[in-house]
Image (cartoon, rainbow, N blue to C red; front, side, top):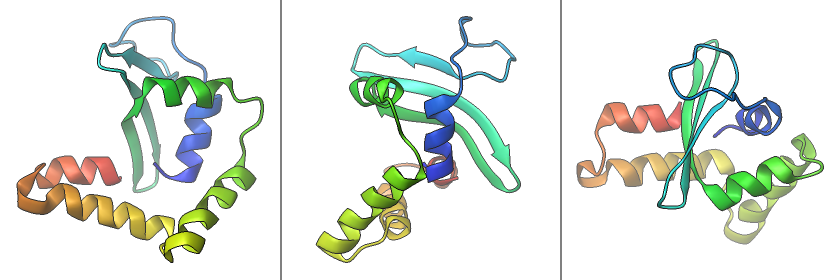
Length: 115
């Protein structure tokens, strides 16, 4: 996810209804395998954040943080840059290409993950 999308899901309210609701809030499905599917439905120009899948433990930690802002994300970006010389955008591109290797996922699916 892009940094503004992470902040968006961090602060946006969660809907009390089940999936299928047409409200502007987040819709969460906590799966038995330890993952949470979050329906975001946030579109800004040509950038889309329709849904994301995140380990439920990380999701709970993110939502329970007292403070989380742009500064925290920028600090996190410095770690792979310092340790491996790789920027966050390059990591996103590597992930995209790894997922596309030997058609692990289809092009449309990979594009959906990288939007």
